[in-house]
Image 1 (cartoon, rainbow, N blue to C red):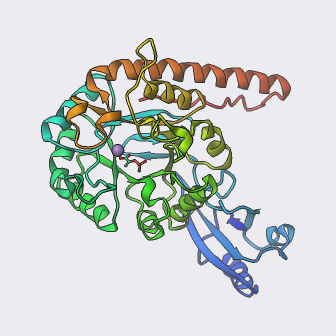
Image 2: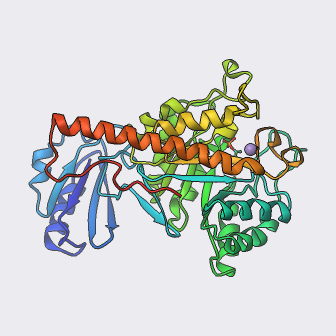
Length: 388
Ligand code: PEP
Ligand code: MN
């Protein structure tokens, strides 16, 4: 259960102290206090953790200073859309993420050379893009495979990002130390760009790493679903991040391991986009590159990666994460699935067509909803939609 206090109630207010001292006497329930800083107001929430089944919502609502009580019966206490007073969007380095916005993060699966980074960033800038992906720390199946350039490439990646107007780079971290390395380098360079910390599918239940990205709020988190665990287990993993204090999370679908996925690398799971949007407040990303895992094409020459992307976007995905490379056969990791850089404009145009159609679907649904139940405030879902 979550108790939300009135906005004029601060931590030393007599009503707050009275209510908290009452709550602390409850048996089998522990209390966590969370001051929440909104855009203009600061409000306090108290989380009641443990066995709250005997508590009455009405009685709790009547306690001094309490504005409202939210009953949370699921495991998704912090990520749920109703869970608390947290905003449902976040802005990082001038880029806003929500279940209405849309961004493409095309870039290198793994940073290999400076030239290769520059080729991608320059192409992104020409295409009007401000986000990318750049893997520096690569979790590989074999210890003999290329492990990524690690911290050695950070300086030129961040410098080039600045030069080409890139504001957010999705970058996987596999160890708490990597967060520190990224942070130190960015600070030393005067924060020329931003990083979204990516949790890869192999670390989907690495709870210590989840807590580490959750305990900092400087960088948002891109969480990739576990490829061999249930959706519920992956959502619980994102709850760890939010429970640790960081609510700026994007949930990424990237396919699941299945013998039935062949000839794709994973079974594409983008039909689950609306499920995440229904159960949580997180923006949803799709990664067609790691889901499909190859560059095979249909008879028209449209690749399966393009088609899978379209399936995610038509269902309302808020972000696309995709591997591109100027010369895919030369890529050190996942070249088989990378889109050739020369096809980036085609990829982006194809995506935009689908996104436009999704927005028409939103308008159609809104019109239907309004005809059934007129909305006096005139708010239409999707009005705030932006694209970059
Ligand atoms: C990646 O995006 O570089 C990656 C390794 O993806 P995943 O964790 O989904 O396999
Ligand atoms: Mn990869």
